[in-house]
Image (cartoon, rainbow, N blue to C red; front, side, top):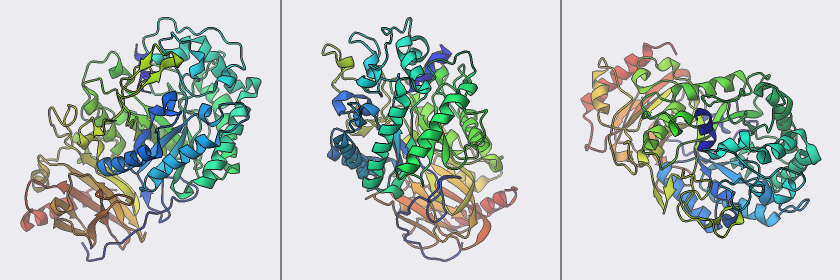
Length: 587
């Protein structure tokens, strides 16, 4: 996935509310909300690149048992509450007109392992370079998506990428890739009609066999590329071909039992690279709330020629561009892919900085002084979670002499955050404090994870979210510690505001300073309380219960596991500082 982009850069007293796992609100988004009306943040992973592989049966997992083990590990180790689950046209319809219900049944069984653990699911119809059948047995590259019978509809040239440095260049220089994609968008051989027909069958099956209150929606076409603009601008192509396709797919969803779930609309794949095609759905009218603006983000410059390390605020602008596009389109934004190769020594802090960009528009250095400009918290799913990483046995383009075993076993990529049952990045990067459900409107959020710049917790540690010296008590309280700050305006919702507590934030050693109260150690009941995440065994969430409407609240959550308790005088002083800081800002 990532290498696609690279080419272009050649209180109160109270009682904790025992809230059951809420259903998603019908007619998402307008900001993702649940049935209580709480504003949701969705965080998790793509599951997974194994769907591109024939050894996996074009599914993320070899078995339902593997899916169950993976879902449990993901929920407990990272606090994920959402996944993007990849399926393949080839898997759904390997023979023209014949829907493989056994494939769909396996997919549904795997999906249920996640929904049973409180993890919501976005269905992703995945493709890269259109189809694996384009490529010959000796090719340097491969693809995924369309079945062989689809590719055989046309008379396409022998594939050749020319002088290709990265696999994504095939979308620009390999006519064997470009021509069938062109035919898809122009409905040559009625190929787009055929695609929509199989999608209707698959989605109808899923609607009948999955818990729809846990389904986020559908991404109908991963990383769309044009195949040929005929001299037009990318934005014109989006208007003439991509948006009409989404409109048709929206109708398919409506007729297949998905009318209450949004379509996750991706723009042209290269819209937000450093140098690339125009796009980003920037010249169309508003999509509206039955769609989500669904973007990917990879740092093409650092994948290729930029030797610098990522740091505080590196991706603030890139993620804010996605926020702004979503607002302009009258909907919410979702970053369904981001990340970097595990082979790069710079990846840990690149990923850290991407999560920081999802959390806030602001760098850590600027947050405390400019919090009113923090912006909405973006939802997203990192690429990717492959439990078979480094243990594959994929015959590349069906060639028994090219067995792919390392990394993702696909075009030389190695992006999985997990391998051999263990997280490859510092857990502090992946298991994050985030506002999973806000009873009102989020006004500002930021998190200091203190993640190290090496793999698996090795390397240098440096704080990015720095507190101004005028807030001396807060500065001292958070020094050398993980912490987050949330500001929200309540709206009278009867369910509490909730934040996922990372595994390092043991409730008994977590400090919360808020207008709702100040506690060293969080109890299991009360206005400020900790309880187990829905569907989890050990993962915890913090609940903050309010009873007003229109009041601005603030909470500072600190991992103080290095001490037995925080003195009452420190809590009082920190609460006063926090209140003064919040009340001095025009929210």
